[in-house]
Image (cartoon, rainbow, N blue to C red; front, side, top):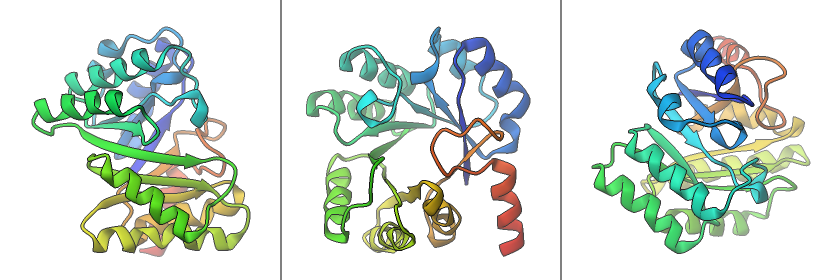
Length: 225
């Protein structure tokens, strides 16, 4: 599935994008950490398809300015509002992470919890990547997400190798590289079995370096098919 990242500074802009362009993707990631006047119930109610709620902490490239408790409260609220996916960083405090996982469990697993790790500077060695994968899996969510920054083309191979490694162990995974050198991994990841591929709704609205648009991703996939 192609997940389009919706980046908007205001509720008005976010709702306009959801209404006019969300149909182009299989799933819409709502970056609520970037919406200054956020009204989460209104935002989720406006969805026309499945959504992923991301409230990224500043230490991992996000824009949320409140406390960790406030950030996690919004993720729990997204679960209560029946968002299909919620992203929770593996570095989240144990007690706060249990709140998100507990909220999902009480809702019967309707919301899938993505436990994520991001390295915006480099790609760790293979052993370190597998240890990060293990840490994400141990959290007890539904999907592991490992995203790193590719400095050279071979970095892609290390990250992509996590996909068959994870699937062999019965664990759903999202894995790819950011950056210009990482663009090829965004194409290869879904072909190898990555649960989601991330893309921008339009040019100039990329949520991460190296991200292509939904239309570019679909065109490439059509060619490969």
